[in-house]
Image (tube, rainbow, N blue to C red; front, side):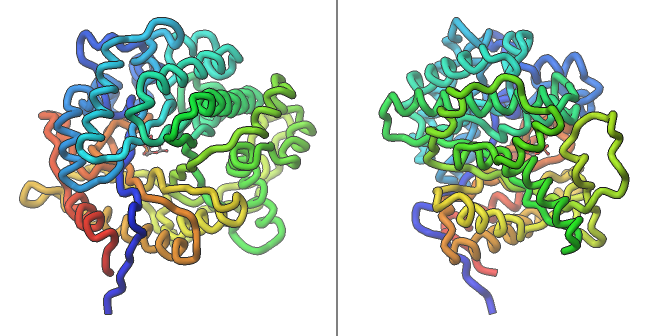
Amino acid sequence: MKKEYKFPENFFWGTATSAVQSEGRVSGDQKGMDIWDYSSKEYNHRFYHGITTEQVSGFYRDYREDIKKASDISLNSFRTSISWARLIPNGVGEINPEAITFYKNVFTELREKGLSVFVNLYHFDMPMALQKEGGFENKNTIEAYKNYAETCFDLFGDLVDYWFTFNEPMIPAEAGYLHDRHYPYVVDFKRAAQVLHNIVVSHCEAVRVFRKKKRNNQIGIIMDVLPVYPRSSHPADMEAARMADLFYTRSLNEVILKGEYPVELIEILTEYNQLPPQVSKEELALIKATKIDLLGINYYQPRRVKAKECLVNPNGVFMPENFFDPYIMPGRRMNTSRGIEIYPKGIYDIAINIKKLYGDIPWFVSENGIGIQDEEAFIRDGIVQDDYRIEFLTEHLQWLHKAMKEGVNCKGYHMWTFVDCWSWINTFKNRYGFYRLNLETGEKTLKKSGIWFKEVIENNGFEV
Ligand code: BGP
């Protein structure tokens, strides 16, 4: 017998993308350079097939047709980001009039088509002019970010329903200053911790400015959460899991949602001489006073860990991974294109944890999806037959539904992503969209999953 999964009235059904990953360049757009424009050229070998930010999915050019495509599949909400370097080419100072027109047009068009407008201010894309001065390592960037945020609230405040200060604030610190994945490719825990702290303060400054404006729209932040699972219930494995959670989840969740860094984390960083040097009392007071309205959670994969098997080099680089090893669980379900585990129950565990640990804060799934390589192999009758994506989304939504029946305060579900887009490092290797992008022709065609999602939205649920 089939079971029905219904979602509440006014549930947000939508998709997410970001400026760098979707907009692209056209001549005369007057956009300033950001770290992705720079690194995808200067470190081109680090990017799959050497594709740069210029060749993305053309949202800058096609936004009207794209928004019509969003409305064609009945989305009721849509997230993108503003490119800081497009709006303020040098990060501070002069504003680019072309960008004002573009973003006003985009947000107006979305509203006219009946979609709620979700706008994020920072999706990994530091303007190059500010990165040259140290990016988020430099305290002046906090002020620059605050001014940028205020400029956005003033220019677009009437057109945006939900603002977000950052997407995955851990990533610029972790990928850019610890794990050598994003520019500036630094490996240094203490510097990463300073970057993270300055991002947190920037978030708080933006929220403070926003509150002063007394607008009736809302503000929040989007976090990525990898729920942690130990290999076994052996105390050493449990401790490894606790440490992974402390460094990668609690570090940020507690400071944003509870207003304080975990005491234990501070103790460990003090012991290993890894505390960020520039943290003021005023900043800590501001952090404590800052509250958000809506939390976004990006979920892609779990983090499985076990106790360390080798002693750590006492003279080596300090890493959170000094306290745990990744655990490759036999028989785990894999998305082999992306090299990550598929674990739909993770979304349920996150939901229950938010309720348990962070009160009844309203939140939504701000990203969830599956990136698949060589999707053209699945084209039949001109359509990508992406049954694997339908299955992936169905399973995640089933677990989300279960959590919601148990009382979690989830307001919506946004899929990553709308049209196949460019990605950090992987460029167009893995395709995530409801619409396929033909890289040669620029054509955007609906996949089977897009047709399925439209039905889900129109029925506000599905049967399985
Ligand atoms: C999230 C990012 C997105 C997007 C997505 C897919 O972490 O917020 O910008 O890229 O991951 O991951 P990837 O593109 O690395 O496959």
